[in-house]
Image (tube, rainbow, N blue to C red; front, side):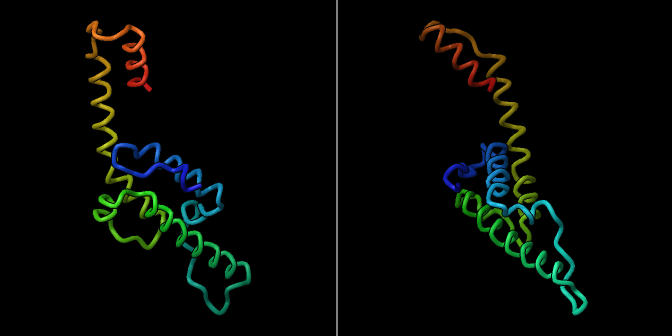
Length: 134
C-alpha cells in the first residue's frame, strides 16, 4: 500500500494528501485523523473506553510513522515534531498551501500563454495543453 503513495516533494501535495488519507482509511488507521484524542483513562473508565483509547493510540502512532515515511527527507527536517497525526497533517497542509497556489498560478499562466510554434506536431501541442489543464 505504501508504494501507491507518492513521496511528498512539495509540488504534489494535493495528490499526496488524497492518497495518504485513502491508504490510511483502507488500512483502518485513520481513526486518529477522524476522531479527537480520547480523554485520559481513569479508574471509572469502561472496557469500551479502554479499547477505544488503545485503538486511537495505535492508529495515531502508526499514522505519524506512515506520514513521515511518505515525505521527502529534505522536507521532514522543516516540519515540527508531531504528537498527533491530525495536527501533523494540518502542519504539513499549512506548509504547502502556498506551494499549491503558486503551482496553480504558474500552470494557469502557462496554459493561457502557450502558443503553437511549429517545431513539433499539432498533436503534441494539444497533448501538452491537455496535460497542463489536467
